[in-house]
Length: 468
Image (cartoon, rainbow, N blue to C red; front, side, top):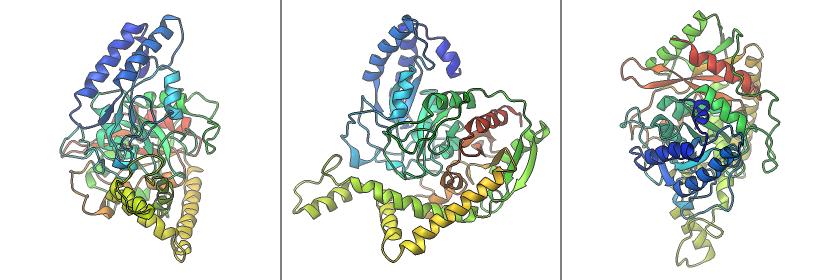
């Protein structure tokens, strides 16, 4: 059932309560460790509020829609931990702008979703609350860092989950779990009230069962926010107007195929692109030469920003604090050593190194120059086509433990998503089919021009509807 159909069934408190109770039961019996915090008490309060609004004749676009929130979004009703021991016990005094905007339209938050701690990861194996399993195949990861969010939608806990995407953290889990994951243009959705990872690439967005549902959520949450100076004016268009007779010119990025991409993944994506061509849409090969630099660039720029953003966790103001420290320096050292996991420490060390005197020009400055070149290449490619296309990930969901001992191999899971993140472009993962051998989901990635989210959503709806 689509969100619109669900909302149409909600006419009073009783009908909203029935939907929310069903979602809360699903969350409480979750066998995938997709959710790590219960919002049932606040959800029941919200049922009464939304029910009264409906009975008074108020029009609410998301009346009674249950939503699972990635646990790096600040919410009332439960701790916000970002799945890290560092933030255990932290109760936020305010909510994120995205959550506030959804609640203003009648949505009801039912649970907090698991993630890689501080959103550092591609598999949700880095969570201090334990890993999330993929509902499609429990021996495999759901992707990361929004793995709990994708699993919650895939498992039917809620029709909507909020995620964050810094280098692929919405799209990768969507691909692995067989749902739609939408990363808006950088700045289109407020970052206020979300635990920061890398401030120049962090983007908030939805995971849903359809492109239409993602478009509706985006239409509610998009736009300027006085609490986030990086937000931009949204387009005047309604993002839910997806019907389009336009024949697309689709740029197939040649660097997204071939070496390193699983044959089974390439087959699924090629089949879906062929179906689009048979439906009258034009496919043209395009090149983004700096793609080969994107991953290295990302893992210089992003750790640098992480090291800065995580500096605030000193154990004094909030979060984990060491006991019986011998001195202030010892307190800082022990608080951070005990609170942060291995991946956070790894990224802090990389970030401090590339920003340090003597290495800034050699690493960080060059990475930013490469980022500018990559952005220019994306803009040039998109000047000739409507959208760019390719796989979301080089492989389908991998087995638990397959990459945990090799950080570089884990980082390679993001090789096809980090480029558009560095360029600030909107991108989406649309289910394209399953692999022939193991029947694992594969996502088609479409990338659009900055602040042309409606056009990208229209293309995604076309790709979603075409039969392979």
